[in-house]
Picture 1 (cartoon, rainbow, N blue to C red):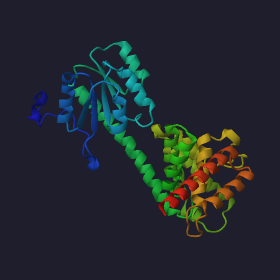
Picture 2 (cartoon, protein in one colour):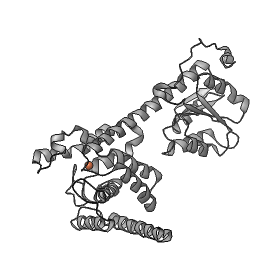
Picture 3 (tube, rainbow, N blue to C red):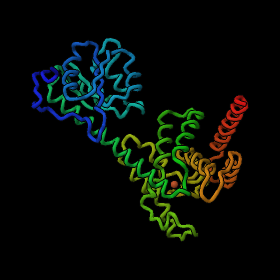
Picture 4 (cartoon, helix red, strand yellow):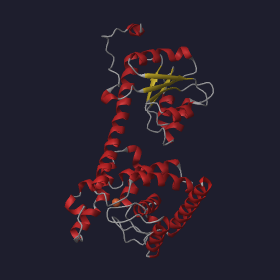
Length: 348
Ligand SMILES: [Fe+2]
């Protein structure tokens, strides 16, 4: 029965759906339109093509729905009774949790004003209704493929970074621990969700540039020569370059490039001093150092939080860290440790 939708037979090829490649689940598409009968043609076509299709009316809950369910694409009518489709698109594109979800805006009328607004709110495409089946099918497939390709590239980079981390087991710190600390310290500082997301992603990929450093240098036990030291320093530039194509992760690039700068300008690669060092890089390096100090390594025991804070304080006295950020971090760790102790007492 399904095959008879739009008079299609199984041999009728519009586009092969973006499903089950590499065992992926069918792409999930959300159709937003006030009128159920108006949603029907697109719904039937997309179901026929093998997508998972969800439908919602055009009320103020659309934004929350998208945040919570993360569809792979939104087909959004611009004229809705309670909210403006363009406004919803704008909100979704501005929010880091949903900005990468492709949005096709749709309207009965086609005019220059609509097309201008689509560009203004960063919509990915605009289609007029009633939909041309081939056009809808092609645009949906292409946008979902692009999205999955980007996600694939991002995952490959994270996987490479993980391999790098296990390769140099006594350098750097556990990315998962840094990511978790980034989340809680970011919330403590009340920085934006986007900034927290950048810190978390940086936790996984900040040293990915080490992939280009030979083992003989990266894992050398003895003292490094100047040339070898210079080679290792290149990892921040290589890492920045590797992550450059991730257009939704541009905020991570300054963290990757500058996580070895020092407050007094004695760091690398650019010798930036003070607040010329990007703020997230200043925060990130403290998270990274603290995690490395409090982690057990083959050649050392884990430092206690107090010992680690003392070492960071020494580095701050030398002029390497931003004293203000270190003060906030110290207060955060002390509060966290006190809370843990109280919870421990409560459990006894
Ligand atoms: Fe590094």
